[in-house]
Length: 536
Image (tube, rainbow, N blue to C red; front, side, top):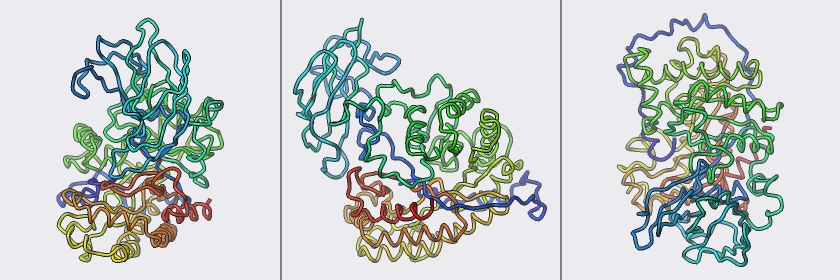
């Protein structure tokens, strides 16, 4: 959950649902006991692959380009004719007066910091056509067919790349826009070394954002992202690339299966993973992401499916039960491909504040028997105690003026109280459910959640206060206490959200604010890296 999704974090199962007849048919004392061995380690959620990213995952920055904007000479911005694209997304043909434009490293956030490498880039392409750059964002230094040397200066606006002509018989395609210094190795070493170095000592990398999991409508394997897609911002990162990253880092990949994916999609996905992933690595499997969370389309989808299958007449329970049922079906497909569950970590996901709902999910039709872990997102900055006011979090609009007048230390004092109070209680409650059913407790997301919500986002004073709190050296101690509590409570893998993000009015989630930030100036990163090194 991020941003506005926090509101739904506190929306418990309706009172009426507790009176709904449950099909569990289980007696706690009669449950088969499986020994649970925990090994607290650290993982990371990778940031979304978007054109405004502060992360440098790929040395080929074309993979970070915004989907084409159709333009027409003399027409308003974005009002060009309909796009005609190749299967990989390149312009197949342009109408008279039409051109297409994309933006890379857009800096339209709430600061003006240049957050991408500058200098001489090498741009390679196949086919015939013409490329230029807009708004002085780059200058062509030299060119020959299929190769441009491009100087990218420091600038607050990002890089605007334009294709204004292409040969329909041999379209301009396969553009590779390579960062300085990587032109000779980008084919075999596609990941930026600084990106890799900031992910050391991790046990898992979660690809939820890279897979565009939230509100995904992906169903057929033929519709999946491929390595030849012109940008991974279009429909997500190719599975082959995610596997290559896991192999490079030697960490377990954590995949989120799309809510609407067919059995064939799941089977082919698992087959490709088995074929290409280092056989020494395990694989985390999770159905979609936060199917309980009403801000995501997958919530209405699973609720509709559960109601249609008559799993419950209550929409919330119908969603929970369908999540359990579909998760088990997915686990079984993976097991059939892998020849068993030995390398799989099968995660049943739930809502962190609601252990009652967690038990409904893991016990439905004995789903826990086919799983390895219960997954939650035990963020702190979330409490229903009176000291927080309103909904129970510091960013609530009803308390915005009061909180905005607080000092950074006062905000962090409240956060520390949350860490040692309601957040720890939440962890212990969920750990008890996990132990009862012989499951490990894992965190698919976690960390702080200082976010201004709704109208409170318009308070620059409040937003700046939350940014300052995240930058405070005290945040290192808070994160250390939070991670210690996770370990003490019986938590297993903690997958922090997220690795690199800008701090904006929508939240300050990154352990780093930009890829080349000095780690000594990143208090959350310091605590996370220490925990990762101590718990490998």
